Image (cartoon, rainbow, N blue to C red; front, side):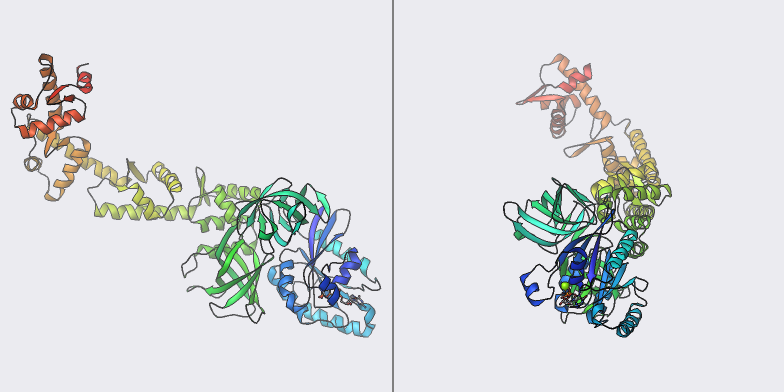
Length: 626
Ligand SMILES: Nc1nc2c(ncn2[C@@H]2O[C@H](COP(=O)(O)OP(=O)(O)OP(=O)(O)O)[C@@H](O)[C@H]2O)c(=O)[nH]1
Ligand SMILES: [Mg+2]
């Protein structure tokens, strides 16, 4: 079974509701006030089985201009429009306005019903039809079927239904495998059941027991029960009108303009970058009404320093839960008239410039090609991204379609996969260049340091920890960098630096060969090593870090000297049970000033164990003798 949503449109009193009633038997004017005044105020809903395999849900909208907000809430998610024009009045202001809005919403197909033909004579009808043809020329309904009907006499109804069936069969089927999404158009409480919401399912499937998110709040809610046009159902899917009994929320917290969605899809933000299609251009910061989904969101429109007015940033007064490619209508806050339409790209930043990647995103959305869209999403993400991040940024695109696109992009080398991360090849190249620049600058400024601390490098590259680790592993494997401990260096620098380091160590070892049991005079050693003045400090650091020299209290001691002293202490313990500072001083023929810190060093490293004023052998010393 194929399910589609048909929306009505047209001037007030032109016979939309009467036509729906004649077609379906359902009176979509539910409200007392609607019945009393004879006009529609809010949205009405009906079901129209068009054929054995196609059923349409109908959203009947009010034509009066005062209720345009409701009309726009109903029109956000339709597949097909039935534009109703009364034969006696012909094209009227809201006929025009509704058509303009439908086109800005991106509705692509429809049927024109010229109704109330029982009220006019053939000559008049011919004139009105000429008018209508001229009015539709150049619009998306230019080639749409036009039918003469009467809700009163029933004339043309069978043909209208057949035409709707034909149009419905060629409308693209909504993707019931894509993530679930429904904009709420009504919310109420049913005694004993709690909150019930209704809406048109834009994509995906939901079943009783499923968990969904209620946006913009992001509340986790549960599907307790489902109805489809008054019948209980276990599942609902894309293209159906649904009533959903929700657990996890009261009806007072739910209303029109909120959305039910699969988790982690799209974004909830007060700042959105978008492409506009202006009917009337407005100055920056003008207060507007953005109609998107079933909601109306107050916002201000801003332009970018470096882009034409086609690109806008919407700064909203409340959060808008939406996804890439969503289309909305912009009206002036007051007086309320149509200004244009927008297609959302992604949440905006606080820069006055549009990120260049957003141009590619806009172009890709315009092609509607998922491969181009996913490629552009990767560029826009500008960081290594996990599969979930890509899904979220891609809005409500089917996961299988995203996966297939990622595979193809990887095959062509457009996308690079690093473990659980994906990134665009040009993004990777740009990050690689940044890495090289940052490290080269560091090596220039700090030629004696082995490399830049990982954490500082990460922050300089503006990366989060885990993606940074993935990139580091990649750069290491590709031979661009050398990582030693917490230091990262360009490979080339690292090998030069390590040559120099080895050289320093070798020179020091040679110069220290006959240093005896004393502390080291660094100036004398540096002299023997004939180090250039600007390298003396760096060389000492290297020798200390390498362990060639050990700092004990105030003095520097050669690594081998410590081993020799440990040997002497061991010998001493072979003949004596304890060792004192004075004994060590005599053993080494040195001063107490040197013997004391030495002994503390041996305590610390477990060569000796301190008992008051004396020492006994420690475990490390025993290791030595084994
Ligand atoms: N003679 C005649 N009257 C019709 C026909 N269709 C509708 N009407 C009458 O026209 C009036 C308006 O009809 P509705 O169906 O309420 O018009 P609507 O387009 O739904 O109006 P709004 O929802 O308020 O925009 C009603 O009095 C209907 O009885 C028709 O085919 N022939
Ligand atoms: Mg009506």
